Image (cartoon, rainbow, N blue to C red; front, top):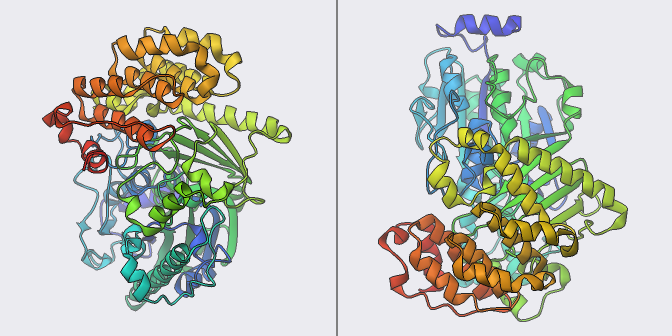
Length: 611
């Protein structure tokens, strides 16, 4: 332990002065990626208050949320842990899980170290936070409630740019002018360049400018209180967003966030970099809590996955060497998916574990936005180009993008022979990470709720070998069906329902290439003892138009005793109804038990499917 940390520990029993340890403030804008600030993107809005912070600190060009949605991202921030390892990967949570044994959220560790911790106001945690995280947590919370001379950690979230700000009506769009000129605004190439998308882009840039003013107001209060040069100020977005294909999607638009850290004069010695410099090393949300602990002179618990990027012992060389960021996307509200990403240098590798689950699948909250609805209407009308319509069509199981050459990820290089070796390396690195965690999402959420969520980390470690088997089965969707056929056939006969589950997903990915297994899969749809396996079998029959999936799925819904399981089944119903070739489902009320109807995912799906 360093001399400085020993000195800090000696102060923990009493109240230290502000000069003994730095204050830390987090100012968090909701739902915006780097694409909306001119400080990071030429097409973004001017943010003079944030730019002023940057001139007196560091600009991080490669900062990433690990998840593209708030509750998962914010739980990652608070714990310093990868969500699929600790069971906090689902938004909205059906089960609030305990923290890993012996671990506490980092603000609680700061409190134990003598800090005053205040949050204004959003938390949105998927894990039980404990009672000692905050001294104050409300829309009136401030650093001003601390004892005289007590160092503090303060977090404030700004909702003016939240997704809901774009839930305006046609009448509003026609009558409310924006400060940003819609005719001059940039529209991403995957979006249709229509008046609706231009207005939505302009309106959102106006909101970013409002956030900037609010952030400037907080900085002014710190200055008025004489605290500015005692305080590290982190400004960042809580994940990407918020136009369609941003929030909720594991692309750069959903994961790449703005990050600026203002460095106070009195604590400049803790940062090995000159003010105003742009940092090229990669940092992600698992690293933010450990960084604050390091700045405070406290040890980072072994149970955290992140590594500090500022503070004692961290050099510019250390930051420059950081070249990797990992991302995850699971269920968002009622929409299930399973996507993992690896950003390494200029390339991003995306692993779509259910590639037939197209991006544009219905999510009720998301489709309140006029731009989302118009995009889908234009798709069905055949008025989109190949790049714009991809959102509503099946994806490859693997995608590889050169972010420098293709910043909006429109050209998949995974099938390009020139990048075959890189693709192999990225796949291997991804699998190393998934098996090392291990990634709990290889089990369906209903299985985790039944078997894992009382102690997710312990469950993952006990079942690490089985998770590796499930990943190997899922990987049978890669390459050709001919190469995978024997192993798929063996997996369909497995005694492990979860292996059968993934073997069927692999078959659905291969589609008609797996047609020779139709009779075997039809038998599974009729007779498999697992309801979820039967639904996945029916899903294959439906996607390949080789059998009617409706009777099997209807029967499985009626027999299911789990609301979480029923919600997962209804994701398949939505896919088969709205996707190609399309099926009609009669969702009679007697299919659903009171237990089903308590589940938020079921409620949302029925609002859409059976209003």
